Length: 192
View 1 (cartoon, rainbow, N blue to C red):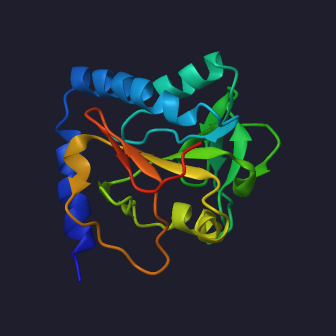
View 2 (cartoon, one colour):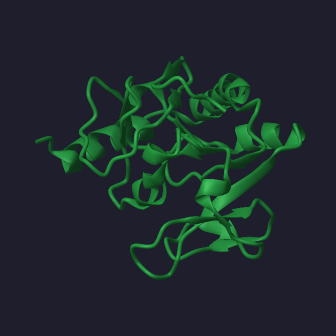
């Protein structure tokens, strides 16, 4: 059994060590590398970056310029409930998890999205993800194992977050791909 707590701590430290200039450049590189993966996706869920997470907003802006609908996750105030998604529209306000969310908009169920950009703490080349530990994304996208891989799940990360083998459990959901500032890891055949 892996020490997930220690692994998360070390991966967060590596992520936090990326300097400000490299963060901006990495986010731009990931946007350029990730945009072709989303060429057929019309409704794309993204995440609001927290702490040292790779910033998906340059990719979100590119998607909006390409006339794609971009959605942010919103947490339910009741614990254990799946995330819903609301169109990206200011103003934003902290939600139940203290992460900025759109203040208004019609909620959409996750299964209606074509693709989702997923935050992570660590990943391996086979698409297994080590998340924050709350289970929000695994709970929300558990159905993907039964639906021919839709929506397509794409992790965004720094290369320093790559693991030889990510710890996994039966409830974990595998990503289709992970995009870093250095390369694209295709874990499964399906892309949006």
